[in-house]
Image (cartoon, rainbow, N blue to C red; front, side, top):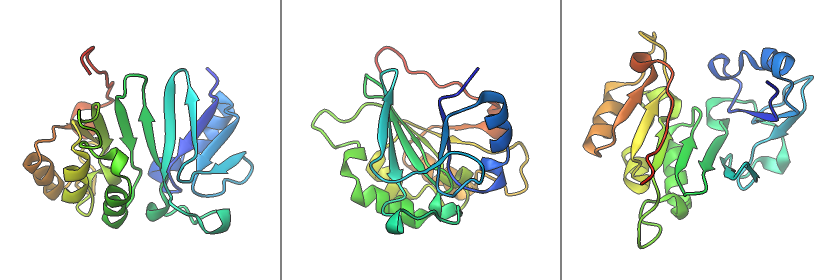
Length: 196
């Protein structure tokens, strides 16, 4: 199967280590990322860049304003954040490894992400817990503003970092956000009911 394009949030091995193999086997036309990938057609992810594919809308929400359109070092704080919105308004927010300061700035700067953005509320949102659910992620402000219907913590079984951290589990529980953990459940397939 050939890919049209790929999104790689940032340079860390747990996000980018298989990139060249994916290019070799699936031949995508380009990769959207926060750092330059030598030898590959790379595009800088940036706030506002969007596209529609097969009725699904993809929009980058971060990095906000890369200086002069220059490549970053591809560190955690440079992670591409991607919102995915289907035709029924159901949303998925892929956060990479952004730190809490960026989570909170997004929550403050982007009122359209908020659950109360319209009088009827917003369609369901599933959020990828930033930085795998590390201690300094998934802030109370982000959860209170976005009010996701569920969160996903993508982490390995018995990982050495202890992701997701118990503080994150407590914050999610306090906000009533169910958590799906890949360290316990393995690969996940997300689907919405016909009601949303």
